[in-house]
Every structure is written in structure tokens, then in C-alpha cells.
Amino acid sequence: MQRPTDYRYLITMRELKDRMVVLLSGRAAEEVAFGEVSTGAADDLAKVTDIARQIVTRFGMTKALGQAVLERKSQTYLGDQTIGIREKDYSEETARKIDLSVKKLIDEAYERAKTILTERRSVLDQGAILLLEKETLTPEDFPPLIQTKDRSAPDVLKESAG
Image (cartoon, rainbow, N blue to C red; front, side):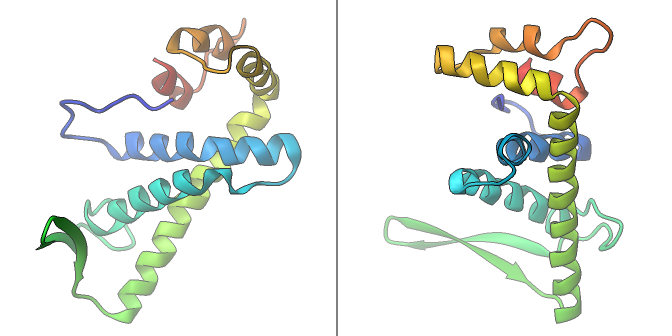
């Protein structure tokens, strides 16, 4: 569950990576539970790709490409429509590094989501049962699911639920 970021102007790299993990957790849950994925995560994949691309090209948060803005988003107005156009001024070699860095961030987030869900498979199953019973889960439904007797939930789960 993603919380709104009203009044938040600064987001850390860790928070961005955690958002990516949360967005990929539905697809990861499919793979963990059923051994295959479906088309259900298409919108989440687009959001994750956008976050990863911004980390690399707009926020300068990767070592591979350094602290430089590689793409700027400009707005062109055509009648009532606003179209976002990415302005870029870099070589094909840099474009390849961008693609590889974006893929690496997404792959790492997906593996982290799968690891969390695999380690906490019973929580995944309990959550699925609860979702079938209630159809919609609220923030209050999460704490009992993500806490165990001997360990607390991973940070990404705590932040997403609370």
C-alpha cells in the first residue's frame, strides 16, 4: 500500500528503492505463489521504470553515471494538451549505461521483493486469505500480518503499511 507523499519534496534513494520494491511485490507474489507472472502488473512496471529512470537520469543517484542531470522534462502545449518531452544530450554509450542502470535497479528491487515474500511466505498466504475474505485491506489490517513473535517486519513493509 503506497501512502500519498503530500508535502514531501525530498525523497531519499532508500525511499525510492523501497517504493520500487512495493510496486513490484504484486508480480513477485505471483511468481512466488504460482511460479509464473501475469499481465496484472503492467501499470506497476511502468511506474517502477519511471522511478528507476529518474534515479539515473534526473536525480544523479547512481555511481555509474554520476551526479549529473542527463534528461530534463519539458512541457509543450498543443491546445489543451500537455505533452512531456524528454530532452537529452548524451551519446549512445551513455544511453546504454542508462538502460543498464535502470535495468539493474529494477532487477534488484524485484529480487528484494521476491526474497521478502519467500522468507515470509506464511504472511503472504495469510494476506491473500484476508484479501479474499474482505476484498479490500485497510492500513489497520497490516500490522497483525507483518509482525511475528521473534522478528519485526522489514523496513519496506513497515513504511508501506504505516
